[in-house]
Image (cartoon, rainbow, N blue to C red; front, side, top):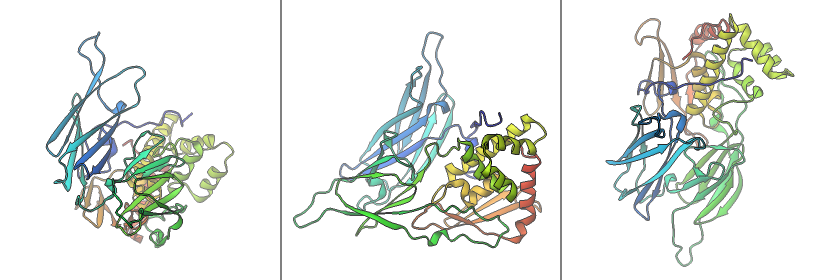
Length: 399
């Protein structure tokens, strides 16, 4: 029963040198910033899993309480939450920052006061006199909350609330063009391959137009959906994801990411297995010296898959991307250097003979603003083989 209890635990605060190390942070909030330029205000929606917060009580007769502190643009908010047996799993709240039009960039910080753990993000709001995606409040019917990212559940209904606009005589309502592109099914080639997947050349297919000045209602489709405002530089983008995303839950879902470390024949057997869970257990048992070691390998592998989904998803799920592939096989690098166009991931001590560096180039495009392409080289052949071998021989330690 290796597939039971495949969970991860967060521990410390991440650094700028390791921005994708989710295991190093106790807090993983979702934040939506919604500009209301007609009111000169910024609405701040925050959702935090309660299991990530520290609840404490004064004495045995008192309830357990968590304390959250939120700061943005020299404004400080406090939130107390009491734990009850029937409490919802997410702590949610919305605040309004008044007189906000002077802020084109903001830094937001969330602190779990009792644990003294923090999380922060920097957001670019842009010029308030120009329409921007943050002017559109996107409401998820299934979550009953503001959508915090481009990742949306397939089948969910999204309500897109537009900024208030008064039509002048002779003006027509705004025209929104809806298009969609199926997600590519190919996996990225290994880092030593000279093959290149040209996902940036895909062309979305128009599936409809809607005229509206106030509200759009859309169903989330599989693949990537674009919502473009005709005549304006305004684009909204949604990637349709499975219900449990970024996690993989069903045994049939857990098979696909094994392609990075399984041989072609092994992978075909896994895909065709009548009992996928049993086949997966047998695969991991063959990689380890004991059932306990196999469970550890399994937990680490799929924790990395989930981390890749959380950090690298765009046109494809994060584990299918170049960065996701490297993250899964090699883990969190010791250092990441980033600029506007590149990311350099270094494993080992930088500047030494044993250091390993992967270079990713920003390939942002119409369908994916989180696309990075690995600069492949034959020099990676031996290190890739060694990385796969470490998995196949149970030499991977838990992250």
